Picture 1 (cartoon, rainbow, N blue to C red):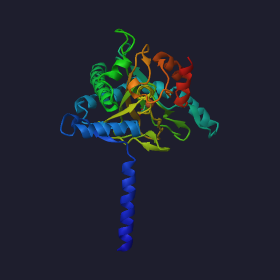
Picture 2 (picture 1 turned 135 degrees about the vertical axis):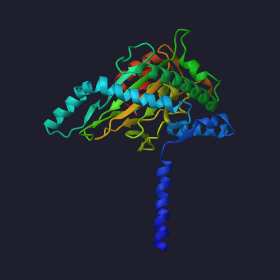
Picture 3 (picture 1 turned 90 degrees about the vertical axis):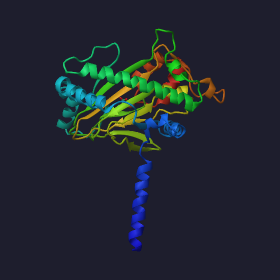
Picture 4 (picture 1 turned 120 degrees about the horizontal axis):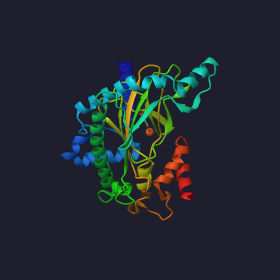
Length: 325
Ligand SMILES: O=C(O)CCC(=O)C(=O)O
Ligand SMILES: [Fe+2]
């Protein structure tokens, strides 16, 4: 009896540990009711302590999300799979295996990617792709705006502050909203290549619709890689380097990576709400406590040219580099 209760206790403790090491899940619908203050506080903690959280009941209908999953998977099979099978990562890995080398590929990602913006050419062969993704993007953009207003409120900034900072540079200088559709196809040697190497995101607010079943996204928390648990129809939110700068380090961008896996073709759709390239980014004056501020002021375009070369290097060097420009 005594041993049984001890092992039971231990089991509960392990469960408890596992639970607290999951990224926060927040019910967004509670923002509109009696639990508004509590929900705002949960989001504040998630932004400050995790830099990542999952939203459920976020208002984007299941019907839209189901269509998004369908058209993205169909599009991959119809228009991308063949190219991926002939891509550089596949060839390089094959060569490596033929040579019997066990050296990990540190400069490639096992990922198929394409980007949707307001201005580029979209795939046209997959039935329903354009309409579905246009609808999804317009809904997600609204969600991004709501989240930025919540961050304003939680940070004690005037309403609309972050969005205004991102749109800086004049009427024509709109913030950037891009959607990156990715697949991480099955990889015969996941020990030799990453799905996507560890990085922090360059921009503002990122809204990710990840695969319901195939996991692989991990977040670095207190020195440990924690899995972002797949949760059907949730939207994963994280903050990029520009939110870190504007919030003066209160909301840190967090390292994350995607592991390659032997089976399952992981789908992930990441939408980025970023500053306009001409926007000047600096810590909000309201949040600077001492004059020797740690974060630089720069034009986002300059940050992006540094990021293009240093995405997979520590962000501190990027902040340092733009300080010097
Ligand atoms: O695919 C994912 O889950 C994450 C993608 C990501 O981190 C990125 O595109 O920056
Ligand atoms: Fe990322």
